[in-house]
Amino acid sequence: MKIAISGKGGVGKTLLAALLTRTFAEAGYSVLAIDADPDANLAATLGFPEPEKLIPISEMKDLVEERTGVKSGTTAPLFTLNPKVDDIPDKYALKSDGIKLMAMGRVKKGGSGCYCPESALLQSLVAHLLLARDEVVIMDMEAGIEHLGRATASAVDKLIVVVEPWRRSVETAFRVRQLAQDIHLENVAVVANKIRSQPEKEFIISSLPGFQFLGFIPYDQALVDADVANRPLLDASQNIIGEVKNIYQALIATA
Amino acid sequence: MKIAISGKGGVGKTLLAALLTRTFAEAGYSVLAIDADPDANLAATLGFPEPEKLIPISEMKDLVEERTGVKSGTTAPLFTLNPKVDDIPDKYALKSDGIKLMAMGRVKKGGSGCYCPESALLQSLVAHLLLARDEVVIMDMEAGIEHLGRATASAVDKLIVVVEPWRRSVETAFRVRQLAQDIHLENVAVVANKIRSQPEKEFIISSLPGFQFLGFIPYDQALVDADVANRPLLDASQNIIGEVKNIYQALIATA
Image (cartoon, rainbow over all chains, first blue to last red; front, side):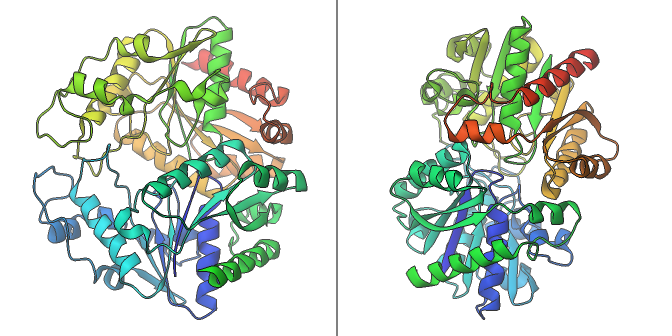
């Protein structure tokens, strides 16, 4: 099972990724969690003991150079576009409680054709993770799907777009679905988060016609209180945990 | 006055940028508002009549090619690193109520050295906006400061980091300040947003020692209700408007 999570910044992608990761791990699956959002901190949210020890792949300059033949940060005209990556998850992932965790780091393409050695490495790595691994892979992404492409789209069992009752997050859902359709990725579904009331739930349903809904996670002040008090987030709200278990059930039923 | 706004996704950067833009415009300033966050929609938040008409500069393929000498999306080894940009704001900005508005679009560097013609154009444009224009410039950015560099840092009167009572947004503030210090940009200040209670305010103050605070914007359900009901956001909450006016006063007093 390969799950990618996208949505506007701040909607709760990382919390959903962390809770789904733990739910799959507790059910006995091997889970590889991928932090592909430089603005997120999946390691800390998952409660990994030393989250600062997780070095993003794009910042491993020696690894980038070793595998692509080109120094990180340079613009050599030629480098290996299919670098060896299959050993990277086992060598470089942090491991805790049956969960492997990797971070991709900050690498973007400008326009459609400016490649760097870092992005060649990450692209190959994502293709390997999605096409060749037999773990459950859960990838926490940004407000787009830039690590995915036509070659990997068919391997994504579900692209989850997280929304909250806020118009801009709904617009992002449409934009993400369009990007997904452009690469023939049709398995898109929505998880609504931070729902405070029935009108907010209805707003989201009526704003997103044609989308599959996997679940509606309630807003819970207990989560914010836990965060402010520096208590672990994953156990802060039984309401949220319960709804994520429903989402997990829906995922294994439909994927 | 040149103001840049950063912070974690979802904290409310765009709303603050829009309210500050309107406050400066109402006080008689010429304001150039820059949407530099592809995940935002400053045009819609400002209430521009046809926000979809704002084409991001990086997507103007003819302009990119005309000014850099290189086709957008290609990787030519040589292109103009100092393209002509001084006419772009007047030619390509949308205008409404004394406000000029531009969007930068999606262009990122991979690592430190992979340049594209789009990013050369945007970099020159940002330098022009910050160094050579006499308008008030308000730039809504992502969770970093990637459009800024050593050459432009000294022109930024204030880099505002928006935070909310949520640990990850505080961590982003530290990261943004570090990035700012790396380019010798010292005028960093915090605006706290979505404050629901005194303990939440105290959490933010105690979590950010050494930061200047420009203001504390209260959480107001009226804003969410207005958004869900598709009413304009800028006039939805007098509490929020009042606090942004205080922030405006603090900015003109200190910058």
